[in-house]
Image 1: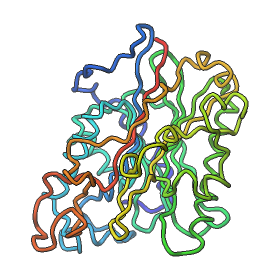
Image 2: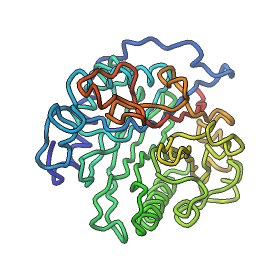
Image 3: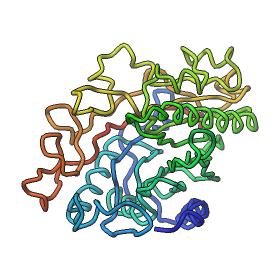
Image 4: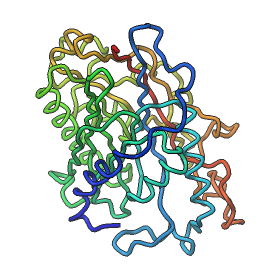
Length: 367
């Protein structure tokens, strides 16, 4: 991996260097068309893929556990299984745009796209990071990337903490409409009393960046996604962002107001809407979210943006690799908590993907 001085340049490098990748080899799967003959479906998925590291030790980061001789006995065999399994989950979801969390570097992102996804996503971009382990956010898309920015999380209580950037990506749809995607991985939960304040600051940064983008394009739609490490009712969302109760309230809420699509799932039981299972407390949490905001014209008249959210389409995706327990598993050595057993550390990972469940939502755009 590269030092941080070069990481901001890396995001642009990945975007431009991969634009010429061959067209997707996977055909469009049944069901992608909208029920309306004049519109086409755009499925956006967010997925924390949990520790997608290569097998090499990077002396500039704390990735030692994820090497063949490290604590996770991270062999090529395990990595290959994980890549293929993540690819299977994403392909089966029929997503068009995917926000990824916990990607180590450019090389591993390319392997996921080429091996696990069979080049079905020809456009991709990787964020910068100050995370001590080197993990970062990324986005892959079947639609062209117009531009990208990596927003540092280094002010106020976040200053000096070393966390992941927010990745902003402008996408162009076939009808010319643009979607601004923001991929997040806010500071992790822990017993440190400063963590809620750090995530509150992250929420403020996200709100400011989304608002600035929507102010500059009154017809735009902005979609924020990722692992926020908070529930919707937690302090960071309450104090850091202005969330409305219904998507129609974006009209009266005005610029700077946002709607959490997964708030449509709040009536479900925790195990039905949860995206992560915390084994020590045997409890589900919904940490992975999708939020939308609209420019002034788009909020007043969704058709003016030529793209809109399909109400009720938000889903926690319980994919085919989820065990019968309903609890998703990755490829880490965790024993009773799932994953590979400590008794056989060099075992493969035939069904592990991530300890997070993906979330997707459908949008419709006018042809």
